[in-house]
Image (cartoon, rainbow, N blue to C red):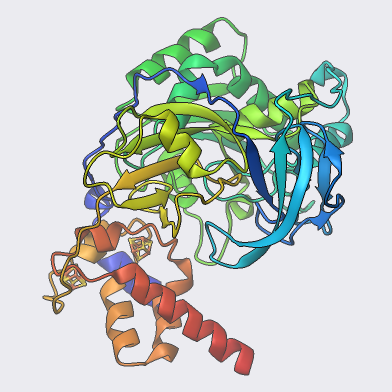
Length: 443
Ligand code: SF4
Ligand code: SF4
């Protein structure tokens, strides 16, 4: 009902925001980070149920060895990311959720001995075999979501996928990991995309890249012209935050609106981050478990870099590899400035969904009263009315929030960024969503 109100207020051309890009590492070639002397691997590095531990203190493990198995369909296994000895099993604070989570510490033997992996031609595998290889490898969404990929490859029979969108938008400031991957390794991205299209029997695919990444666009164009893939297209997006959010991407690329409360698959589309596509290729063609990903280490560090990082590595190790923190840097985020999660410690271990480590400076902004300028409404890509969430949460009128489609909010932070009164709108939205959940569980 209120969505119609929102539609009346829709100013589509101004939706989204344009924060300074600060892509310090756009021209920085990906390097493999020297291995740390230990890793701390969390049993929950994905959406869904935690993995179940299979090792104990004192066990000797190889890189890529299964150390925790998935317990339910929506879960993912965890593999050792170093060879060495299981030194400790403990509870640590999850760097993204703040929850206490079981973790395994492996001390390296310095050898990086891998388990045996089996290389195959993906074209010789059945759909079921491909999905099983993706599932066994523990592949999850690497763009920040962490959703198990094998689940996305098995949509319900009544929701067939007609189009796959490879998400190369990378719209958040500072982060360049996906851009460098597309420039340096288009083969793995496109091969992963072809595997996904085959599994889903999708008819078309788009690799969606923002216009401000001309080198990645040119590299993929050149690569695609060498192949005969008439159903794979490049789609150039306007540069704007949050262009990489699935619903926004689907609207921009296909002109399809994802209805409130629905998901991409409900409109026959699968959106997959380009880093995840490369990991799908590695798992299917090379039998390689997911033990690492490219991360941008940036902000107030001496030499910002794009590094291929083993999961479980402490942020402090990576920051040291980048020359240390510059004077004034006092805040550590996992993720970019818009969606990043502040860390309590520089020793926080990276997990599968982390694609950026950002050192920045804390800035205290004084929250003022709403001036009813409607800027937050103008920029909201979901055509929502964030100022109403602010009003209703302040007045504790939580039951009104659902009328304004608060559950549709993807917490991108564009509204808070645009607010001239420095109102932390996403914090109010969090409170509102939590209160609504409580009301539902009380009913
Ligand atoms: S942008 Fe901020 S000040 Fe303007 S209407 Fe929205 S909440 Fe109020
Ligand atoms: S955080 Fe939610 S309300 Fe704010 S701009 Fe993003 S989608 Fe809209």
